[in-house]
Length: 574
Image (cartoon, rainbow, N blue to C red; front, side, top):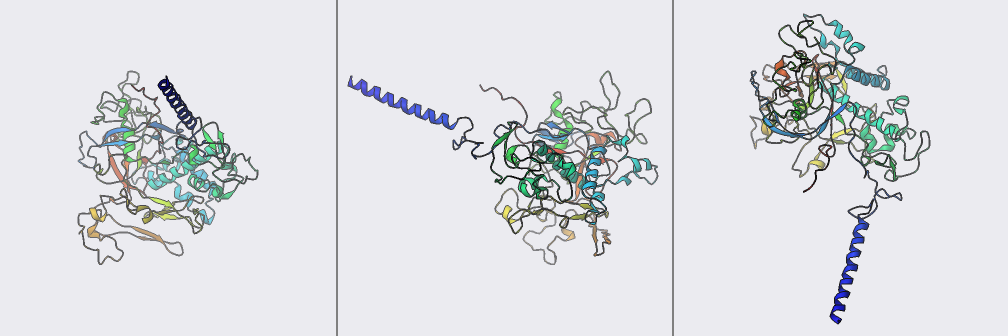
């Protein structure tokens, strides 16, 4: 009996201990509790603030979702041009968003209108901003052709409002994407009451420009530090700000994000930046193998963004209709009037042709499109086969002597004078000043060791054909490579201005140049209204100087996706 009592007591003690551990476990995993510490998250008394109810990234204006995956990048059909610049290789891209259509004249005109209002061209400090962003309408001119109608009307006439914008160089396209990022996030913050209502229209001025990165880095100094525009938690428009730290506050906003004093990345409200798609992203999105189960996506047997080997539709109701806008033959830009016609002679209104299986329009024809990559005749899949991109130039925020980020002002704004003499602004007042990363970021790193990686493994000194390992570059005053040691000895045109503002042009007239390829030529993809069907293949790739525009190259924007690869329900576990 005594033994049984002892056993019973031990069992009772074990049960009490188990209950204690269970209650502790439940307490630490209780609603709103941290799995790391058990502390409450989003506690009204000042706990850690986080968007614990965040569901998924919102789809930005104009974008459609492109679920990532693997594909064969490069051409696998007959290569009659023998370019050898698109050898097939297996790549994988992450999920991202892409513009449903090319950027239209109307979209770009909105950008120009904003620049003109905020940075009046008649003011000395801003005289080059509007002009530098304006498309080159003279691209339509031809020595033996009459195209003055397009020169005068294509950009601004409402008849062409929904036509893709052209005459925009690569630099201008990237600046448009930056501007678009700020305007979209500005609207989001206004709707969520972090910014004064309608301030983007009524209070906008050169000294109160909203910048996404500047707001995230230092909200209280963003938009000129005007606390009547940049609102704090619970503050009404026009009211004095509350004295509170940026990390405090806990009330929620629509149940999705914590209501901090200022919106932060932890709120989940701020969208990633609009940008040009990488070449791999563009080609993957154009091919749209996702809807072509009869084709082997791994072998990349698809020739066009649509199924089949022909440019005309095989569907009964529209049989024979062209599926894209392209040049059908010598002197034939649209076909015979009334029949066998693709509906256009120059460009055409966006969405005039069926979308591909991702829901993207005009991924073949209409206009070719700029992508982000610097051009090289090869894609180095040995170095990387995931989210491939050549063109990384890593920068960081410029920090002042007071330890705070420095914002660009009208006095510190920088401009680039292009080889053709066009002056373009590379930053705007209100944005954070940027400087190249240095040894502080690169020391002992294995993944990168310098700021500019455009010519990595293909153009830097160590990878050049004539580089002599172990020998110094004596005699080269500036420590740069000599002409006979440059892999890509393209012309070097220098344009500058003197103290009076007069332009000084120095053209490279050397007869020893053998290529046009350098770090400032960019890839463009897809065929255009000027191209034959051969160029409609998504794998085709060509290059053009980033500072020159044409009448057949446009662009569309992309945006990275944060979070899961796709919005799919969780698979049941066995």
